[in-house]
Length: 142
Image (cartoon, rainbow, N blue to C red; front, side):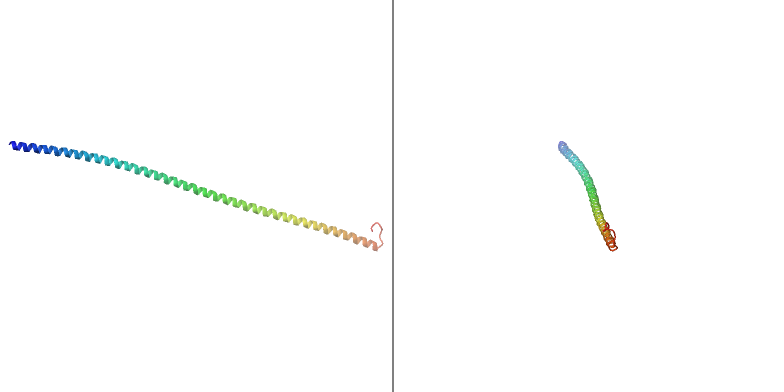
């Protein structure tokens, strides 16, 4: 009977040791799982933040692209406007030049007309003088 008791004691001692070890193992497992959970949570937080940052970066780039496009459109329109303005001024200059040429020509024509009339008057006067001298007209006319 005493041998049985000793064996029982050893068995109980061993059982206690085994349970203690099991408890230690479970505790360590729990600690490991908790740490794993914490790590995963942190990883998720980091990824979420990274996603938010990328989204913001994309939004910023899109806005930048939109701004550049608008700037390009504005510059193009400005160029078009300047070109049109230049064309208009050129045409205005051409028109004025032509107007000047026309006026100059008109002046030349009038001057020539005056010269011609003056010459015509001189010729008629001379003819009148000659006719009078042929007919023996007065001396004052000669």
